[in-house]
Every structure is written in structure tokens, then in C-alpha cells.
Length: 309
Image 1 (tube, rainbow, N blue to C red):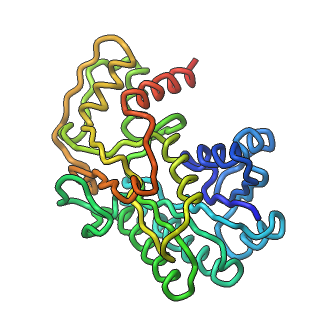
Image 2: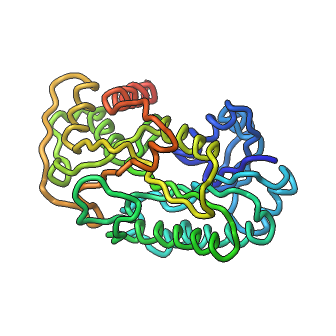
């Protein structure tokens, strides 16, 4: 039996593939983007299929690798902003692809375990403090709404057809190879010589920042634990909140030199003021987060500077 990763060419996917391969698994991937043979071997993929997640491609992958024992489903939309600009594209990437994958599993590999990367964006705004898995889901963006629809499809398929799935709601994932979002934006501007940064929002927005290296290890640990029910939901957050202002200060300090940061007060549509995990379910696995934000963002700055040398 082999392990498959959809979206293996993405930010989290590449880190996950490496962790899984280092643990002796045979990893096969499907998703978008060309990967040369040398790069495929470097990241730990035995086989890569560049294409849509549909029955024809899934059958082709099964013919090549055998039926999977576990599928990590990371493919889908990855940006609130892009989901607002292109909501139907985001729907297709997240909801339609998941529906096709579940239908294939139902017919061809019902014993396979599915581990799905969702998002804390499903919770939306209005939550104070740490958010538990059973909290109200009120997404503020097409991105969050589509992740919630994806979760509902997984739950429905588990109840109706016994296809096992664990949904991990990821919070604010960052780390080496992230080429978008706040850390990338700040480092790009600092590299360009800016020293007086104006950022959106108030700076008081709180996020549960998790290093991608920890996240990849977590997803692997989930697969290594028995699934208590046919459908399982886990907050994949640390339970520790850090403000945007604090993150900006860490990045500026690690970069070096004198940097001032102020905030426009303009909040982007789809951005809640606080997203913080109640991590009780995760701690019961058990699982421990090893990379604090100070170390994680220092490593990110080092990685970024290495890219531009």
C-alpha cells in the first residue's frame, strides 16, 4: 500500500512529502504544476501526476502505485483574496475536487483513510478567545465557505458510505518556502529597502501561528493514531495567539537595522480580528508543538535571505 498526497507541489505539501518519505513511506502525488525528475526525487516523491483530481487521473495513479492506504488531501484554494476575486475558481479547486475524490474513494478505495487540510477560516468572526471544534461556523469569505462545504462533503461521505476521514483545521501556517501572506510581504519590502512600513489592519489582529515543519509532523502523527470515529474533526492550532504587530516586530528585528511599522486601520474583507485554536483535542492525541514563533520567524528570515543571495 502507498500514501498519496494531493497538492503535493504546494507549500505545505512539499514539507509533508519530505516528512512522510523520511519515515520510509512510498509517496505519490497528484495536483497542478510540473516537477522535474531531479526535484521530484529531492522532495521525496516516487511519482507525480500533474493534472486534475478526477477519476481518470486517480485511476491512472492507482495503476502506477497501487491503491493508497492513506490520502492526504491538501489540494484546493489557498487564498482569501483570490477567492474573493475568483470565487468560482476557488469553488472548483476546493469543493468540486473534493467531491470527485470522495466519489472515487467510495467506488475504488473505500478502506483508504482520508486526512483533509481545512482552515480555521470556517469559523469566521465573532469568536472570543480559543475556538473549539464545535463552535459556530460563520465564514466571512468564499475561501472559508468553500472549506466548510468541503468538510460537509467529507462528513456526509463518512456517514453514508463509511469513507473514513479526519479533517484538520489549519490556522496561520508559515515557514520556509512560503511566498505569500504577511511574512513574505514584509520581507520583500525590507529587501527592497523600505524601512517605514505601513501595513493593513490595526496590528492587534490575533492569529494562531504554526510553523509548517510542525504542521507536516502533525499531519503525519494524525495518520499514525487510530481514528475513533468514521469522521473526525481536529483543530490543528497551538492555542497560542500572537498579534500581527508582534509578528512584524519579530521579522523586523531578525532582519536587522531600524524599521518602523504603522497600521492603516483598514481591515480587509474576510479577515476576522481573532482566530485562535482550542487545542484540547490535539493535545489528547498527544501532540506537542516544537517551534515557537520567535524561532520560526527567525528561520523564515534566514530562508528568505538565502533565496536572494
